[in-house]
Amino acid sequence: MAGDRRILIDLGSQRLILIIGGSERRWYPVSTAVNGPGEQTGSGCTPRGLHRVRLKIGADCPIGTVFVGRRPTGELYSEALAAAYPGRDWILTRILWLTGCEPGRNRGGEVDTLRRFIYIHGCPDSAPMGVPGSHGCIRMRNLDIVELFDAIPQGIPVEIRGGPPGSGSSTGCHIRSARPCPTEP
Image (cartoon, rainbow, N blue to C red; front, side, top):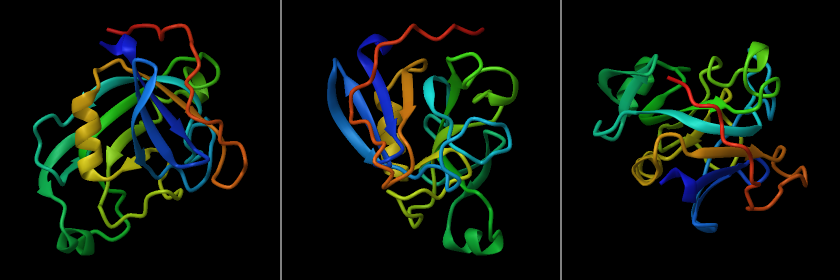
């Protein structure tokens, strides 16, 4: 099933595109790192290159479920909860944990996407989409992350490319062919 499905995240347009059977089937507005693209640990940047979804977390959790350390806290996001914890980086509803596929670029050492805890995840619906705003992850609206989560298999290839919005480096919506990512236990 993963063979005919791919995800492309275009940093320039701040869009996530679901590709099925070579055709763009759905796109979603996203918010990537306010610090722009980059792979270095501690940079707060969104890593580029070829990845795959290592783990899908949160199946069947209610919309608005709050996660800390990839575990549901038992809380549901609300404006009152947000007011009680100002400045908290909200990870809500579902998590797609990414792992890099390119040693030295986004896998291993100081550029390891998995060890940087880079996710595609839900966020408060009041958070702006279509503009950078995250600490490195790819933020989505809650209903959008549920739809995507349910439409994709674990292990789906993910390519993150382009540069910051307005940079002219948006590369369109065609995902390149690549070697499969190494499998992990």
